Image (tube, rainbow, N blue to C red; front, side, top):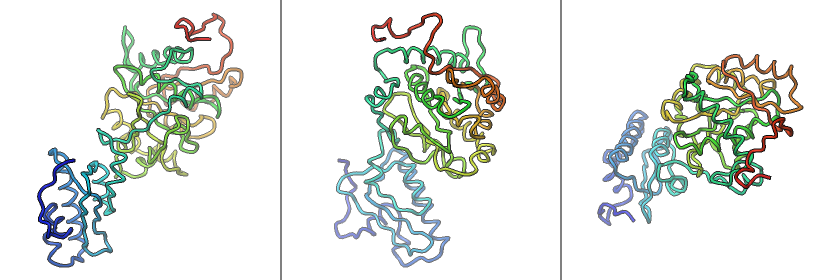
Length: 357
């Protein structure tokens, strides 16, 4: 347990708050002026932020900040044990005048102040997906081949020049149910095993998001929320997972204007921030089907590579050509043949390691 600063037992909770956070002027009487209240909220936020940045700790259970209707009744209840509130959550609550329940916040706080979503390995295995640190299978070997080509275009090497924005990869298909989300999730799991890269899997299928259900994890606010509200930091919505190197950005709130938000200037700034804040990050966008929803064509403008998933014996030539024409905003396109049952060369990855069937 962390040691607290000695406080006089005769002090009330409000007096303790006054000593800790400078509420002296609030103790002298009621404050109804909204400008004064806003100043108090800003002051408290700055103090909290400064405390964290200088290596200090904010220790309390609940804090209520006065809003436009309430009188100044700021309260700080000292917890039975030290509770560390992560800066982003505390800062947002302080700026918006909402209450902070530190006991709930601390349940979601890890060592790096990020939520950790646990991905069930058995769930992955049962759903025929790549299992991190699991045995080598034909599936994992196939995706090793796929990711090598994508990484070569993203980073360059051996006489191959890197594609502009090649670290941003759009996974798309012509129609629904052709395997794009399955491909996105497995490609992300495979890329996460790389030693020199990290991967961010973004659910950009705003109408029918399915990345979270595919990985069997809980979600929260996501990309659409960041695009719609300029006051939100997209990095705060990124979900860390217990798979080393893998993080996920949910689709977020549904909107009838998803294409319009994607076409706005803010989208470029948000995506640039995701790339700039982590230069070793490979970003995978799970897109809506190109012939079923318009956002795919706009997303193609923000990426350097597109991987088009083609369902063997199902995706027609005309559908594929039509879909590719809509994704013309991306110049570098590769095809992935999914659900193929026949290999002319007899290629059978995985069996060499003793795990293949």
